[in-house]
Image (tube, rainbow, N blue to C red; front, side, top):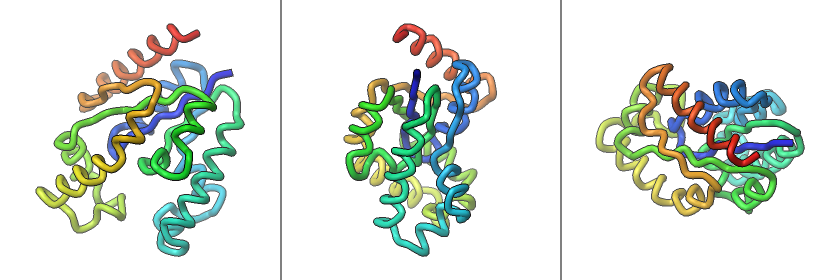
Length: 177
């Protein structure tokens, strides 16, 4: 029975790498945000708007515990999930955690391209976006750094880069078995 949790800031590649890595390891893949959306029939943005962050984080905590009961699963968490309640400690006890670490500059480049699909980033660009990411990442780093594996996911420009990162992680996990 294997459980792997991918954590990291938005845009770090948790879902992209998670889909490929789960196939390589023969695990089911769950994107926690999509799982929540399926259960509540609303987007994460709608849940945030309707319930507020505190209530959303409670939903997220409960859904994290639910998916952690599954066997042979790779879970891509939301960027904030490790930073609330005892979620990080819980994930470390339930399975292996991997922090996909990416620099502020690289995250800003990636997120500039998809900021329209991420409500928290709307209206931010350039230096303002970079400052927002830097401030958020500084707050989250103490939680992210508790992961059992910290993996440099800086270079993820092409499909081959994603394959290379996934293969390196798969090789790393094979040493744990």
